[in-house]
Length: 357
Image (tube, rainbow, N blue to C red):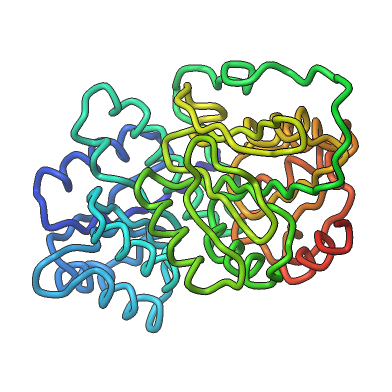
């Protein structure tokens, strides 16, 4: 009888407590094996020489050699999927965004590991993230079995299904985008292609709180349009993109001809907060045929059902193709539901969006 090989993980963190916590969490998943831990990058390098892991979890703030320098060395010498474990500080967030630009796959916040009430959520997130990271490189690997966790919460917990209603006419378009693993780079490519008069854009990128603000600020420096982390009540305007804050759901709302966002608390939906399904359902409800739905690279199925609801409400919908995805999960699930009008490469999606505005 053949056994599926486990995902081999190297944990790199200068804190002995954090190494122990991460090892315990990861080892609780039957599909993951922690093959080694290291207190700094020099020890990590020697461990990699002994046995190459499938995934590395890396603290970016360490003595002797910082995580960014180590990440550069890994990516140039022997690329291995890296998940960043970062403290919830402004410096930590900015460093982590830089790490994503250098090729790291995902960010996980350390703060949730110190809070007993948040630990259950954190366990799910960490194990799912490591599995996603393994899939980035090892495409032959079959999807790993999920942990025994509470059932997934549907978007109904945050926003009720679409009630079709007559609304005052508006010609303003809204572009709703959902992304997860690999999405930070995909969003950069998409948003850099947007002109100053681009339609209003609302985005859910799975990312911890505080990090979304640094991510939005970074994109704002790179793009012609204005990019910011959304605040409750922000208007959706031409030439502007709003990114949902980490750990909050974001919904599209409408008052007369004005679109705005509601940022709110709520349960994890499809194991995520913010959830793409929540954003897409609200967009179907309040923008309907005046919207365009875009689903980008990411693990799992968040956004697939919401994109179908957008399509059924008259929106144009597009999914990133497998070749240009880091992880062909969310787009694949949307395609399976027949929620997608077009399947395009990342580079072709901006043209599709602008052509339908």
